[in-house]
Amino acid sequence: MDNPVPTRATVPRPSYRGRLAPSPTGYLHLGHARTFWIAQQRAEARGGVLVLRIEDLDPGRCKPQWTAAMLEDLRWFGLRWQEGPDVGGPFGPYHQSGRRARYEAALEQLKRSGWVYPCRCSRREVAAAARAPHAEDEDEPIYPGTCRPEAGGAVRAADGPCHWRFRVPDGQIVEFSDAACGHQRFVAGRDFGDFIVWRKDDVPAYQLACVVDDAAMRITEVVRGADLLKSTARQLLLYRALGLQPPAFHHCRLLTDPSGRRLAKRHDDLSLRTLRLHGWQPEQIRERWDEPDLIAAFARVPGR
Image: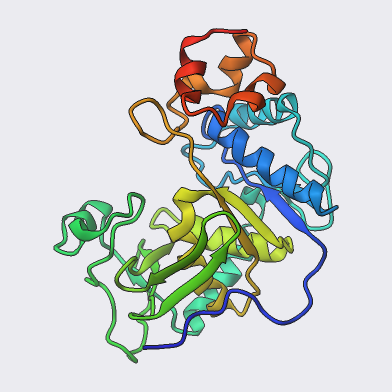
């Protein structure tokens, strides 16, 4: 078994740089607000910079009206950033839709080094495969290897539209220390499999775009939800394959609804926009969001 993948390089890092990275696919909810507020607090405590990056790669789901609403709600809640699409900065553009050339260059680098291969399997086919039911990862089940080339074999050229998958080194231990969740350990090929870095509809996947942008924007710490711990393991493999230095990580606990489901943008009654319309103030929300019955309280009380 290989040695664990390192998470930090020994070269000096720049001063603290954090980021907010929302996707304009709907109204922001309480979970977003709490995670973003923690990100801002951590940046301020270290005298650092907070970057706003709009993750709008998916043209089918990301709409300009959601971007405008998102910026308004972030400002209303008291979030402030020093770099972003509305204030500029040295590492723009700050919309992912304007950064495609960077993702294409990273994909070509992965192709040249043999880390990726073309795949025509649909999500339904992967989910139906024998190994998939054993995966607890809700966003990308373990790939059964249908299109995976033989070890050491040449990566064939794509013939028509296809996904590009990153070939994980089976048995590779991926470890990192998370500032909120403590020591994390995943095994490639067991806890997660070969993952998509470029979609069949010619859209860069989250894992690749996130790594490329966080490195290019010199982010030193990524603050995000605990549902992305396994994504961090995948991304650390991408950092290594691309020769990039990974940031530190802080994964926040998730807010859940009364049934135990994590909040999503479908929870319109718990969006910042709805709470604002019902008379809630940002200070009130922040005072109560660590209460055990937080979600039930916000859902049933339409104001003060």
